[in-house]
Each structure stands twice: as structure tokens, then as C-alpha cells.
Length: 501
Ligand code: FRU
Image (cartoon, rainbow, N blue to C red):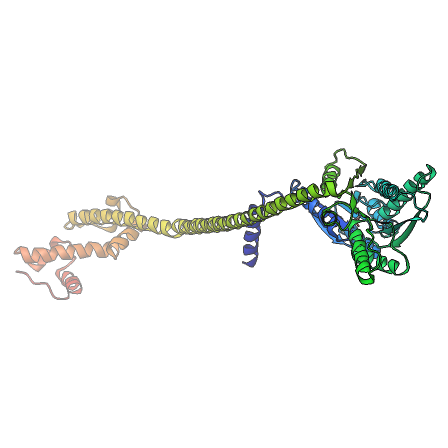
């Protein structure tokens, strides 16, 4: 019974679920961090996923740990995800896990931070080297603005995690850009000093504060991302207020150009940023192409551009408007999802009812059918034979009646005839001696001889009562051998002696 109920529920669920498209491909997403930039990327992925109902996402975050990220990638491999999107923490350390996934036959899209080698399916990410060149360009602009002063122009670089490709390439791009400027006879006295902020605002705050304890204020600060630029700006502001030293303005540049950075530019905390696109939508689109075995771009490098106060304000307004739209969209989506859930539930209940009543109908039908079959066999095996027996019995009794009538007739016709013997009667009724005996016994309950005698005695009794004949005469008339014998037979039959009128 439990099995039946479970099967019915499963059937209903199956029926309610069959209209909605269930995801066929599971995509594993391995994120190195969980900051604003990553959250934007995740959100873009989720939004794009709405256009691909045949795909689902499973996301794991490594919180800056290479070991954790490798273990998470390995668990995705074990679970046999259909595709993997990895944004590696540090390139060299995470590469072995990426290679393992690729060699296990799982398509791997490397996002934002490259890994060495070519054992991956596709790459989508920003041009970090160009970001570095933009930094160099901005530094040179600042240098030019300062004019020719004898002391060196100090650039404080707040670097990202050293092992991560963006940190390496941004640094490289900046250094090469400044070197080129030097070769052109510019920036001879530009001096780069680096501290490591490892991508975090808090780290940047700390390392810049430490730096300021032992160094004079730098001329500019270049941070590898906006969060660290904000951290550096806070450290400088704190340093200036607490030490009441030089109130000199220190221009700060960051990277990313999304909400926290744009807001910091508008607030005058930092001066500018370089855009660094996350494009989670492109990642999902590429995943769809790969999974559907459609052509896809193997290596996509995204453009970058400088964002200063003139661009930041409209961009921020745009971002705010988009955020509002997205929030509205999210609300609408949540409402639609809850309506859809309600609809599915209603449909489930409806189907449950239909299935229940259908089963009830089938059971009733089966019951009626079985009952009918039982009655039919009962009629066939018991009632019909009984009826047949009864009919036969009726036929027989009718036959017996006719025979009894005919027997009485023949016997009564020959009562006064001495030739009325058993043989005579048999020949008259066209029956053998045994047949005659059996049939007379059946209808009269006695043998033919006794029957003849009984009929003669009844006739004799009639004669004695209706005529003036004597006992003697009656005995002779009805062929008794003597009056004495007649009297004996009469007494035996009627229980009293015969008497004439
Ligand atoms: C976010 C982030 C960005 C940076 C990028 C580089 O995790 O630190 O701020 O531009 O990663 O991969």
C-alpha cells in the first residue's frame, strides 16, 4: 500500500514537472573570492542563466585559498559537472586542478585570471597588461603636471596577490609603460615603490599605513583594484589627520570601475579607475555554446578604459538605475517564481485528485467485473444445472402424469376382463415387463399386479355402493377367484369387510 501511495505521488510529481524544462547541464563555478566585483560577475551569470533553462549553476568560493579552490575543483570533477568555470586565485597553484578537470574531459572556461599552459577550453577576461599601461599613462600625466622638480616622483603601487595573473600583468604593464617613457627621455626620476594589498581593502589600508610610518607621502598611489585604492585613501586620510603633517593631495588610481570605485571617485576619495569587465553573461553564453557543441571564441580579451570624475558620475547614475531595474526585475522574478510554484502545487493537487479518482474508478470497475464473473460462474455451475434439473423433473412428472392417466385408463377399461394380466397390460402400453414394473412403481408406488388389484377393489367398492349386486357377484365381475379371496383383499385395502347395499 505504501508503495502504491509513493508511486502515485511520484507519478503526480512527474506529471506536474513535465511541462517545466528541467536543467540538463550542471555547471560548476569556482570563484577565488567573494568581493563586490565577483558578486557582480555572479549576478551577471545568474541573469544570463535565465535565458538557458537547460543549464544550472553550482557555485563554490575559495575565499582566497589555493588549497580550498583546488579541493573544490576536484569535488566538481568527482561530481562530473558538465562544464567548469574557474576564476583562479593564484595561477600556478590552481593550474594543476584546472588541468585535472580538463584532462577528465570536462570543458573548462577560465575566467578573468589566466593559468599557465593551454589545457583549458576557453578564456574570457580583461586585458590586464593594458590596464597596467593605462596606469603608466596616468602616472606620466601626473608626473607631467608636477613640472620639473629635482626630487624623484614617487609612485606607490598597491599590488594585488603576487601569484595572480592580474597582479603580475598590471605590474608588468605599468613598469614597461614607465620604462618606455623613460627611454623617451621622460620620467627619468619616476620611482616605483610597491606594497602588497592582496586585493583586499583592509590589507591595503594596513600596508599603506605601515608604509607611511617610514616614508614621506608618495606623489601618487596606484592600486591594482578600487577596493585597495579606497583602503589606501583611507590610510592616507588617517595619516594626515592623526599626524597633522602635509595636507598635500595624493592622487589615487584604482582598477575595476564598478560601484564602490565609481562612488569613491564621485566622493573625491580616489581620482580615477580603469574599467575591468566581469562579463558573467559572456561566460554563460560561452558555456552554452560549448555544451551545445556550437562554435565559440577560444580566447576573449575584454577592453579597458580610464574612468575619471567626468565619466564616473554618469556611470554611477547608470549603475544605480540598472541596479534599481535589476532589483525590480528580481522582485518580478521572485513573484513569478512563487506564482509558478503555486501553479505547480495546484496542478499537483489536481493531478493527485484525478489520479485518485481514476484509481478509484478502476478499482470499482474491477470489483464489478470480478463480481459479475463470480455471479456468471455461479449461474453457470449452480443455478442453470438446478433449473435444468427442475425442468427435467417437470418434464418427467408431466410424462409420468400422462403415463399414470393412460395406465389408469387401460386398467379401468379391462377391470372385468380376466385377461387383464401383467403381460396383457405390458403389451397394451407397449412396454417390456421390467419397463412396465419400473414405470408403474414410479407413478403408483406399487407393482402392476397390486395396481390392477387396487383398481378392481375401488371399482368393486363402487359397485357395492351403487348397485344391488352381491359380494359374490361383484367378486366374479371383477375377476377375483372367489368371494372369500375378494373379502380378504377388500379388508386389507379398505380396513373393513365389504358390505352390499
Ligand atoms: C576581484 C578582483 C578585482 C580585480 C580582479 C582581478 O576579485 O580582485 O578587483 O580586478 O579580481 O582578478
